[in-house]
Image: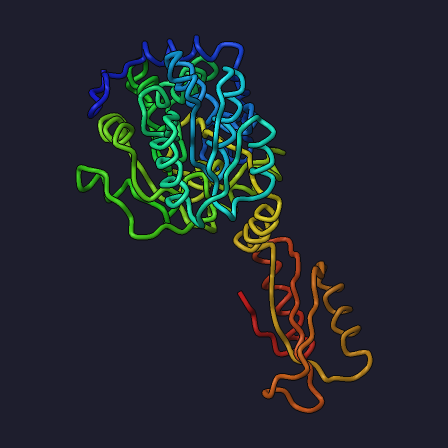
Length: 409
């Protein structure tokens, strides 16, 4: 049993009670094998596909359990939350299912599809602030002014218990599991899984994954208390949290074996792998366990379960991330070179690229740069390639044809 600061003790029995509360509400999401990662790791790797959960992420679990536990009087006052996306949708649907009015504050720059989905699930959406911290402050003020109950995304025992139901499902679906890898923001999901799993299977290794630019847990665990980062920066907005929650921090410190970090390149490569190999749409935060497996495949004892925590990715971010992932995987090449500004010069260049089997995605010309001669033009090319070796071959082909190649990445 885990002792929580300023909260009741939390055990696997609380997670089982949450599972009963969620019966008929949250889906038991599928477990899918990954042949590619299995070959890299050297033992079975499975995806726990929480990106296929209702609302597109695990957040419905904790939000529903938290709101279901409110008194009749509290429900009558309504609930309020702050989120850039996943928690917003989870609270909106949970409140609608329970007949509770909900108000959700979202940043002014929140992706329009997430704003629209939150409204469609029944919440009143209020756009406020440029970053989530400002939005969070506005939501807390609203709660104080109106009496609405603030639903925290991760720092409450009921939320942690709700997220922990995912851990029970993992043990049921993959009883032979040896390692579970989970993305970490505030820590509610990892803490809930830890409570469920470690009491039943203390031999299972639990590994949390954070983005390098938003990794509050490593310094916090070293200090022995939650530490607030001065700044956070990552494409993975689902785990872009600058301070661990008090409730999950204690659990993670006591029960989790390791918290490691991954780069932005690894995150985009993980997302690309999910899309291409598993045919699964996963947001960068949800791909963080895959990024960890790709970064150091020999560090994980299998069978491994990687939790794909969400699939709510903005289409524009998906486009940028896939492009980033292709570059990280050596399948996207940008380069610049100079040509004589005369008819047929570009056609000749494109012919060389065709011979090299490079797919041209974009071509741009610069004619006004003072560094160029009167009869010169600079061309920037964006190419799709077959991998790092092919990138090298393409550049070598162009140099052999007499072009001066200047890579841009």
